[in-house]
Image 1 (cartoon, rainbow, N blue to C red):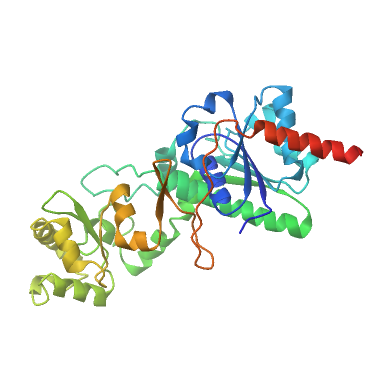
Image 2 (image 1 turned 90 degrees about the horizontal axis):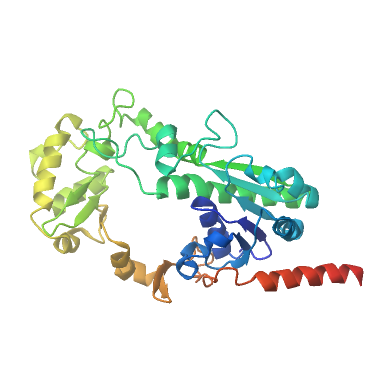
Amino acid sequence: MLSGIKVVEICGIGPGPFCAMHLADLGADVIAVERADQGANARTNLINRGKRSVSADLKSAEGRELVLRLIEDADVLIEGMRPGVMERLGLGPEVCQARNPRLVFGRMTGWGQSGPMAQAAGHDNNYIALSGALFHNGTSSEPPSTAITLLGDIGGGALYLAVGLLAGVLRARQTGQGTVVDAAILDGSAHMMQLMLSTRNAGFFGEGFQRGNNLHDSSHFYSTYRCADGEFITLGSIEPQFYTLLLEKLGLADDPRFARQWGSSKWHEMHQHFAELFESRTRAQWCEVLEYSDACFAPVLSPDEAAQHPHNVARQLYFERDELLQTVAAPRFDNKVVIPGPIPGFGEHTEQVQAALEDATASVWR
């Protein structure tokens, strides 16, 4: 879908490379500019799949000139340095857009390009803590559990950068003018809180925003439970018809203790009963009872287990290449499954890309 879009990625760690991979999965031509110290484990680095790899020293005049030549006909540049680093390298937005006025300059950081904390070090859990997104993780009796990077680096960072970049490309194609995209994990993870913020109006949080005073933490019908074999299952039976079906399948349809789904004063008691019930059978046994129904149920699977689940197999969600488990491109268009390109070796395309640049320069003077 993004065929014809050229992306130059100044390789870093985390959300920037993931964003570039996502664009490559969707058909963009992504050239990853890697430093000499980024070559370790190149062949197992899944987020480099589908890209072309070029090695360059950005502190050298040759490396900087290579980047400037690459962006002359590019649509997008992605970088994830601290604010000001690209400028000090001589590759800031003003310099790059002087070469290519329609370039969309994507900047991926944790705190953003401005503000008192812009220059401070940080990681995923710090950004989602300050945004408010970490607040409700875990139970009220324990500290908030650190979320995996899906909430910050990927959800609040990489995917927001991707949307911003594509919006910038659309604008550039309409006006001929590029833009600078300031994608901060802080901003993106805060923006993702909109749905949670709106649920206050539905009374899911009682008085204000107290930890442990919401259905995700305390209710019996939207929770995760341990089974007899030590594995886990999840419930999400919010709507009354789904809750009714859940009770029927659990043999509790006539139990008066569960009649008032939203009687939150009894949630702890009902949660304890559910916990004892689910621990009486294995995960596989509960799947036989509840899976494929409208009870809003799913087993908690490891990635290896997920790759073997019948639904995921039917959708061809996972695949293996060179003994590495991967997922296919997402989202899908016209119901087609897209297998992304291979993982390049470190600097594998350096000579090819440089030769193409030389040919392009020569053709101008012919």
